[in-house]
View: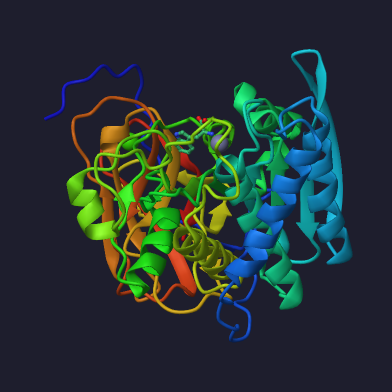
Length: 440
Ligand code: TRP
Ligand code: ZN
Ligand code: CA
């Protein structure tokens, strides 16, 4: 017997069982675009093209006092160079201006027209150097690699399912100033449309490591998969989380990923064994120094990492991989749950336009308003009719259920009618299904 306070008795037949079949209800929650036709494989990016951009950055530094730092002429010249290439290739570019340490800084944002803008995949690098040198590895390498990957999108005239945006940020070396400014400039609606941010800061280190950011698992997997095809072992990036432009994105809940070939940490002998190079020496001995010139680049690392950028862009934007954040389907229509003894009620979500099975980690967000959550037995019913128990009745007197459950639904087809089934097993307390949501 449960022991709890009751102030009234109101048995009575409540509302009859209701079954609603609703599509997508909440604003901003949309069905996935139907998967595109078979898409071409990601291109092999010619490393010579990337190196040609680095040669330009070196020349710009040479002509402007030896650096491309925030507030210096070499920065603006770098931005004009990148912008010119993107404009000629058909991107829509925007220069965003900000002030830092008394000087004007600039971010360059480039959108590739097309794709679902509510699922934007954004890729970026910082375009400024430190004032001590030309910053060819840090971060000419990322800037040039992202530029060349963007130009490959244009060469392929890619028609991605998801929108592609690229960013070159200013004043990273002053404390992520440009990327923070960019993120702060976005409305919450605009933020919600960015489903992933990929960062590339130092990808051609002269004594390279192959480090993958350990943030969003789906993004991490894309990069690991790529390096697995090359049989190159990777490690998790540990040289300082939050030390580059992905941090402001991560801080507002955007899934982030990226690659890194190492800065001033020392390569161990185990790392030299698997990656080559020199043990006991920094990955980049010229990190933040004047010797970070076009000679300070390992072409092989630059090549692999740039190809990995293209691979990730194609994977994430052309429907072969679902970017993190997933596609959500929600029913927000209230369904009254009759008090015990009463019938179970259901609320339905119809999923269409997907391919294949439901995920092994299907997210089921359940919001039930009820004065005694222990009364409730809650099941997810898959399209096959199989029930997945989410919540059992108990003596738990806590009101409401507002929980996201993870269900292994891999034996279900994604498409079909999914139901949330709720039955009240304890007399007196009552409530209703407020909303529920499936995220694939
Ligand atoms: N520009 C970065 C910095 O100076 C380089 C860096 C160091 C980095 N550690 C990192 C970039 C880890 C990405 C991840 O801080
Ligand atoms: Zn950097
Ligand atoms: Ca009850």
